[in-house]
Every structure is written in structure tokens, then in C-alpha cells.
Amino acid sequence: DKAILSGFPMEYLSVELSNDVQSEYPIGKKEKRIIFPHRLAPEKQLEIFNDLSKNMLDYEFVICQEKQLTKPEYHSLLNSSAMSFSANLQETLGICQIEAALLNVIPLCPNRLSYSEMYIPEFLYPSEWTKNWSSYQENKIKLIDKMYYLLTLEQEFPNKINEYMQLQQKKLQPFITCDNLISVL
Image (tube, rainbow, N blue to C red):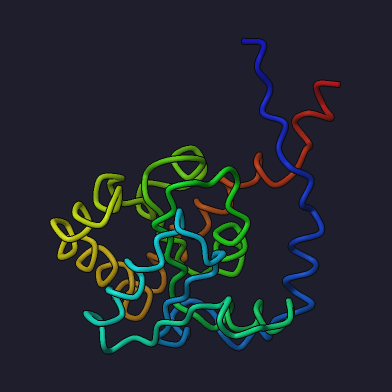
């Protein structure tokens, strides 16, 4: 009862995102693209993303760090994408996935690390599916099915994804402002 969720003062993020993106990509109108917005580091498990790209040929898979994008270019690419994928083994906040959610891009995350507290169940998959390469291989079909399920909702049932996005954005609010800490002080 003495712990206080402080949040991280990121009120600027919504303004920055709205300045950097065009509004021509609402829910249901996103490109058939899945992005990997993370650093190219072993704990981000890029090899899983690359393998998924070989199994989901009807979607473009983009590794953002290989593009050398400016921040506005990155935000524009993110905004037009259908999904932002994570298989991270280390994550303390996950600004990339927060940005995705704020732009109504599906933020698919493992149910571990900071993601467990910050994301609604619809955007989480069981942690064991990507805890390592062999576990991923055993669960690849389940992960692909989860991805296709959400991507189909985005294309064919935008009202449902919109409902999920609104819940997601509401859930993120205490983490992306420090209002709670300020009110307690």
C-alpha cells in the first residue's frame, strides 16, 4: 500500500506522434506490414521475427533499425503498419510498443516483463512461446495463428480492434504520464 505507480512523463509523445504522421491510416486501413521496432540486440530475438516473415508471405516484414529512418520517418512507417511485434527477453518500459498502441497499431507482446502489466490480454501471447528458439519452434503455429487472428480483425472487423485499442490506450495512461505521482506529492 506504500508503492506508487509513478509513470514516466511522456506527455510530449502524443504531440510528437501527431506532428509526424498522416491521418490516412486509420484502423482497418493499415498496410499489410508487420514491423520490428526494437534495437538489434540478442535479447530482442530478431531471428524469431525473421522466421515469421518466411511463414507469413502475405505480409511485409520490416526491421526498422535496418532502414536508418529519421524519427518522423519511423513514426510514419509505424503509423501505416498493421502490427508491431515483440519477442523481447528484456524490456523495462517498451516505448516502441507504446508508440504503436498510441498510433492504433497492434502491439503484439509476450506476457512477460513490463508488458504483463501494461498490455491488455488481447495483445499478449503466452511467454513460453518465445522464451527461446526451441520453444518458439514448438509454438510457432500458435503464434502465427494469434497474429493472423489479430490482423484479420484489423482488416475485417475494425470496430473490434478499435475497441481493443481504446482499452489499451486507457491501460497505458498511468505509465505514460506522471500524474499519479504528482497527485500523491
